[in-house]
Image 1 (cartoon, rainbow, N blue to C red):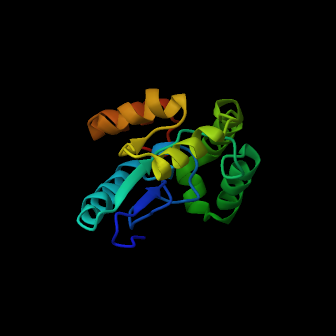
Image 2: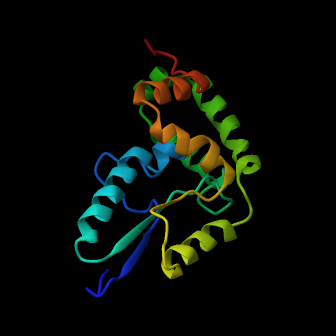
Length: 172
């Protein structure tokens, strides 16, 4: 990563740690990408590598239309997981939760930006600029929703996410 002569590294949310969340879970961007854990991992790498002259740029994109965010792929993944689940799990979560989740996944295509150049422009800037930023947030949803959420208290973010999402059938 460094040639010990002032190298540079551009990082996306691909670095994962234990407890980072299920990579197959595409219901929420902040949980899918492990945003708080990913941010902590990158912050640690950034500070650690700075002693060797390496600058780490953190790129935290919003939703972009890719194969990973395709509603067909995500719906198939949810349906496969549901089909493999035990009867006890199906009873605890209920068919209604699956139906509402699949409906919500269907609306992902409308939320996704088609302009991937926003992300690649951030990568280019991080790698070629004389003074790159520490963090990049390509996409309006990243700037206006996810970045502010990363600074909010955890209990508030959890409340916002839980308020919007369907509850399992046997939830307390």
